[in-house]
Length: 275
Image (cartoon, rainbow, N blue to C red; front, side):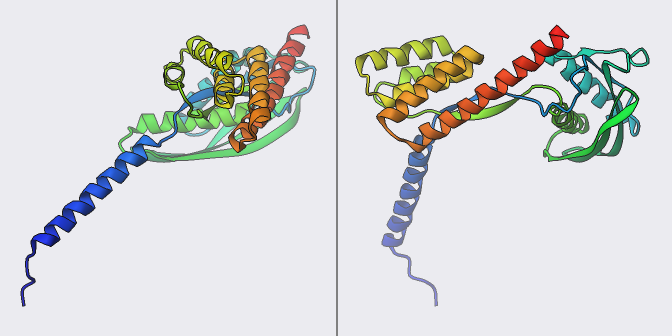
């Protein structure tokens, strides 16, 4: 027996489609606005105090991964500007740490791959640290070289974080409030000065505007540096004093940790420079 076609079934289907479409629009409209900021992470400080230079020896194993990995490590050492990058074979054993490495796995294919490497650190002719790190990735559509570069960059950064200050990217979510659109738009375009000015204007109009204090704190935090982090902490504390929001409390804890980490990284750089 064939089902009876009813105009009501078509109306019902249309209503369902319209409802789903409206729900989709609503969900898009409520997606929180945010920005990605760079955060400095202090190293684990596994190097002796007298060390002022680092030398990276040629890495053993599959050359497709070994040579680029060495170059990436050396680039991170240069960029951090904490230790001098010493010339392999001409190191002073008392003030230089020597890094040797071996590629354990270099399984790279278009779209995915796995890499692992063992790193050994020597100082004054003694082994002081050894570890094996690995990374894997699934990147459909990526070329073989793209997959390799992504994995090796992760591997190099992971190992470098043991003795160098490194940066990581984190998401910051803005709090919506009345008249915040222009400031949020400026922040999304990374025009921090304009965003700070606009949120400051809102604060002057209403000293109880906790959203403005919190959002301005994000803008200060994104600006980087000790002074800006201190300003961000003050704004987060003020926002919490007005309203105890879990988002504000998390932001304060995060900024305080970031400031402590940044100060440690600066102290390490100054100590090495003075030495």
